[in-house]
Image (spheres, rainbow, N blue to C red):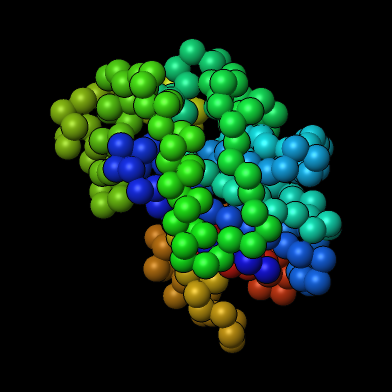
Length: 276
């Protein structure tokens, strides 16, 4: 299994793109055939060979197709059907970036897979060739430069308004303060903040914070594999009122109890590592 993730070289693109990532599963790789993608506020553009099939199950709905596609933020766990060998390049956009990069495309904001995003219609025929072996430093840097060049024309039509600017400020602040403190920090009514944030991301502030907490929690569990953790300590560390609160939260978020999750270890971070 080959994988990596790296940021763009271009600082202007880095305002909207979190990272590029690469994943290659060969016929000899043994891994979980149906890894689960935990709920996430991020959108990913998946670049793949035109004849390579994809298959997701989200909210009991199968989403299938071939080739490149846009995976929108998901508010429920999605199952990825990765039975056969595959190779993909991923572009992870920052939360809310599609609002600025695709202002007139009328994209749904959440829980969908788009085969041919309208805002990329002129770029899709120019998708870079995806090598089945791209793990050397030179190969990775070449792909990063190629992806920068491929995406850069999007910057000519970037749309920034008061809603996108406010949302960006909110995301930065929520790394260190609670939702309740936003109004005072931004000198703006809570209702105004909520309205702009939902317009840009499709999420409420509470949904976003919940998804970020889940991501941090799963990353923590990924880093601390071995003997089962003290769930009471984990609950306290991540701001849950008690252990039962954490158990209910995980069961809702990833459809599994903490014990069931540790037994399966079937999320993408467990199957493929921290690369997405």
